[in-house]
Image (cartoon, rainbow, N blue to C red; front, top):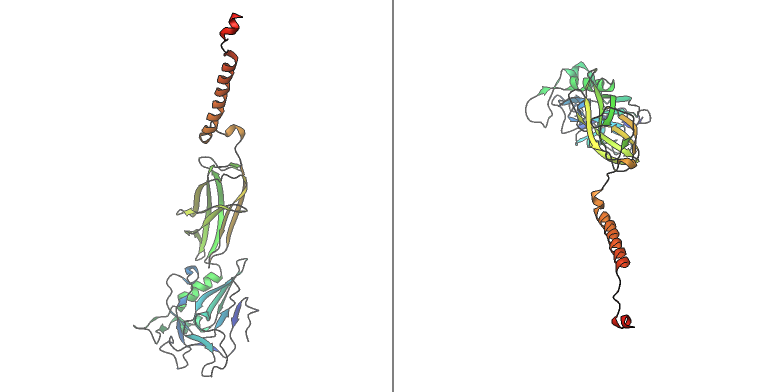
Length: 320
């Protein structure tokens, strides 16, 4: 029976079953069509390597819990595969069919611990390492099986020899100034940098991801921008501080399939202008300046006329 409780979201089919594919079995299959050629790898090259070759598989199938986001479909069956006991009538719906059927599954926990489950121990055998493969429905000749490279890359990933990320040397500063803990002022031009390294084949190397983003957050992100790396793994970006003061965070939250979760946050304060920092005359206020001075001018003219103007005395009053 299934044992999904032990393997955190991966259910393994019952004993005696196997993955069967009547379209993509190997030419050396003995007739049960359970020696299959699989090439539906995950897109995460950090797990399976660059351009993996088709592999031989002969074993049990698995199904992933769709509600578990931690499960990784490392190797899927083809759309014509299903899981069942060979040479037996199918009386119940199989555990999974088609691309929902997993041949190799992985899981990365929230603390970055990793588990890999192979549905076939023969995948890791010398027999399959040294075998040639050719699917019955494929055109062309045979080719060397990719089992050795594939399993080696997957095991290295499980042991965190690949795909491990770390960060260091987080800096932020006003453009043209040295890094400081002082508060920023609204509309300041600032720079942010962080060093990110990747574990590759057991060695730390500069990470060259092009999709790392920085968020400048005050409850919600006010700014989101891509960080640009250099050859030494230093990621930088510059931006203008929003015209809203408060307490913000520089936040880098990088979570990609195959990599450990990278999370960095730095809190800073953003203040408004001091009274002495405002411009003496604001161009947008010129109409108000003009109206104020026109009122003063009008009051001066009215006062002058009122004080120094005298009406002419009628002639009749002068004779009397």
